Amino acid sequence: MITPQSLLANILWLFGLSGVLATFSYFAWYRKLVGLTWRALLGMPRLLAPLSLALTAFCTGMAWAGAADYQPSPWWQTIAWTVLALLFAVQFVLYARAGRRTGWDNPVEGNKEP
Image (spheres, rainbow, N blue to C red):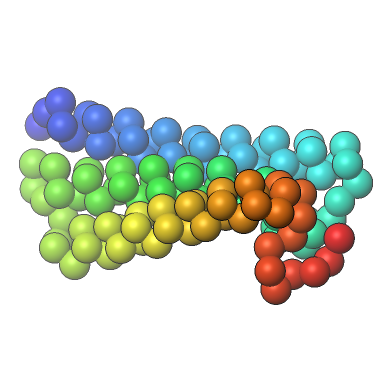
């Protein structure tokens, strides 16, 4: 049965998944434009912040959809998706802070490749 709550939950995880795909599509173009390797780009807050935000939306939508279904998912699946959503949200905050502090094109600490 379709309820407004389950519809919104499914829209949220689809929005998150489309955000992940859009992020990789945009940065595939950006990488060729600037002349970077994927290894260098995957260490920059410019890619990691929007990717973490999209993954937060995806995991939140999956947890909500599992809890809001007509036949809910097992409790451990909902908890696992919620924990992942919280970890990606923390990661987003840390990457956004690093981007503001040191610049969006500087690698995060631990990856010093230009």
